[in-house]
Image (tube, rainbow, N blue to C red):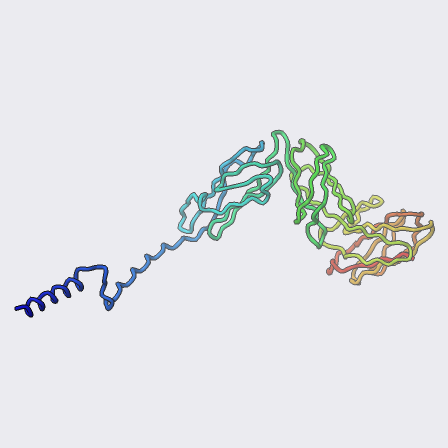
Length: 311
């Protein structure tokens, strides 16, 4: 009898351990397979992105909520303002977050929104009521934008400096014609009569040749410099500063590697025309005088350097 009770107790104990106590799982039981992730819904292609809202802002601290709307390939439109990635090209003028623009200063900036594969932008030009903003670029033809150029409005005396791309903006300008001056060491100064809201100006590096010297300079480039000399248009053109210790006659020789060119030299009232190897005897005063070198026939290879010497 005692042996029967012992056997029954052992069976009960084994049954309790294997079936009822969840803290001791059966190590040989297989884990259930993970449920597959539900397939993500395909995103329809975006065919167009539009930005709408008030961009005529006139005070620092003023805000405006911009909205961006996406048009999808299936023809539907949806407001994606909250989903788009927003940016401002100049946060000192305005910042943007989820389409909400806040004016930080007067000037110009580009507010952009990116959604999926599409990108759209608007230009923001906050300025006091009754005034306007002029935006532009100072550049060296064939080389790109010029940083650090001082741009001054001759009327209001307001000034700004170009950024790394050569871009500048001046705000709070009175309506009407504005004359801008551009200055940077190593470049010829330039002026621009700006009657519109964009002003692009090319700047020429200073070319200075002394008696007895030979100087090589960058060649002519598309969208080059224009000078009016003796009532004649010189384009494309280079201004050259000639330095002589004493008054006299200098023999100029200009050479350009493209033999198809026709060159013209304006110097102290005289005009000399020639081929890609031009020579002229020119009377010059003591000190510095200015001559102009132009190309009167368009040819290829405009970026080839030319050389000028004065003997």
